[in-house]
Image (tube, rainbow, N blue to C red; front, side, top):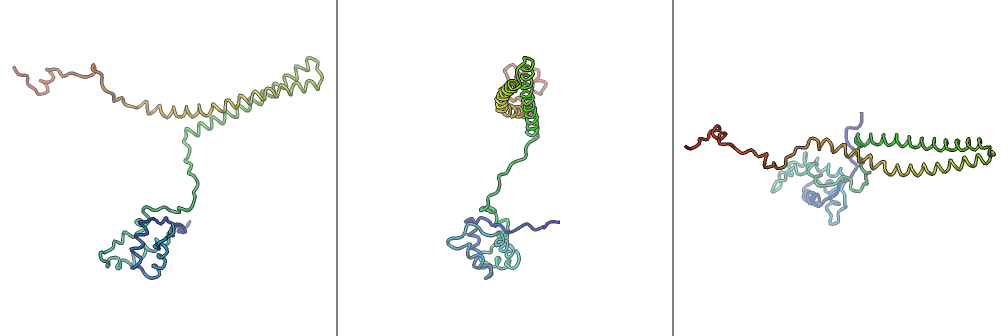
Amino acid sequence: MGNANPPQDFNISLEPHLIDTLQTLLPIVPADLAKTLDPYVSPSPPATVPYTVLQSISQWARTSGLETLQSQSPPLDPQAYSMISLLAGTTTSPERKFGEYIPAKEPEEMEAERIRERKTITALLNALLSILGSGFAVWWAADKLGWRNEWRVLLAMFAAIVVAVAEAVLYLIWQSRHPSSTVKRVKTRRRVPSARHKKDDGPKQPDEIKTPVVGDMIDGGLRRRQ
């Protein structure tokens, strides 16, 4: 089993209201605790205060300092020095730089990425087969024409290079357009259910307004005068 107590080696931002609270306690806390608080209530206090200092104040207010707080004039509320009250309005570890939070991807986004990956692999395989196929076709055609081997190889390489350049251009164009279309499809799928269940609360047309009939008014309890 892991340690049940959380680590307490972090700092808390020393806000102005927290300084005022510590200054109120400074004359009445024990000497050792007052010595600990003194740097944080000085005219030029630091920007942070250790969590353990606030924890010691909270423990003193709930135990041995309870009678001292109540004997003041006017009496001080011990709950005002609990950890919840002391930490209110402060920032934990303001000097640390935490990593950027990256939320988990939604199922629609993960499915769109899988589809994009499959299409990318298919496009690369098709390009590779086109390059090899065109080179072999030109080499075979040159062989049927009776060309020498060195010319056949050069012509096959030239054809393969031309096809490779064309495939690269087509792949870049496809890659630049594909993500935007995928995101558009995902957003469309998200908007359709909400639009499908949307209730039309627009104003009624004049022909849709029901005019009460005199007979209906009579049936409803109104008597017509003779």
